[in-house]
Image (tube, rainbow, N blue to C red; front, side, top):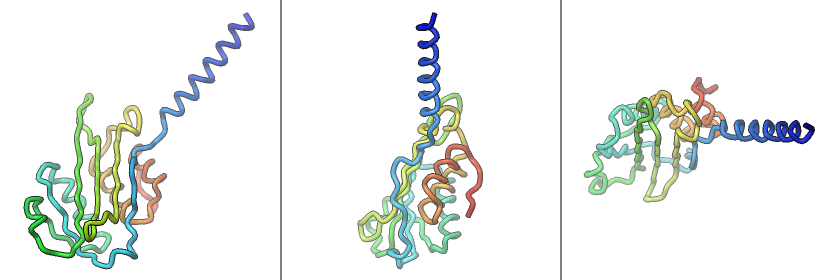
Length: 168
């Protein structure tokens, strides 16, 4: 009887640890925040890949406005022929289906003179359980706040997975 009680306690402890570790918010899988001091040219080209939903492009443009950037939207087919020294922002977002449609991945990269100066990649499945479902608009806004402001990775992870508003 003592052995069964001990085994039951061990099982309960191990199950609790596994359950709690599965609830970690780790949606941000890669991050290189923009160092605004190294970016003197605030004229950015948004490269439209033509595949990602237009709403993402509009959210990006709105956030660039908020942070004082000027931008030009350029079709991907024109991006290499366009002679400019302006930094280029590329993005992609993928939607998946699991009982409902949700944004699974969001990747945003800014390059200046072919060098990556900012990069963020999120995977909402890493939020765990039903937290992968959420507003694609809100997650895109938070991801851009993370990239362009002093929003911390920890706060952004929580906001991406659990919702809410940033403090800044």
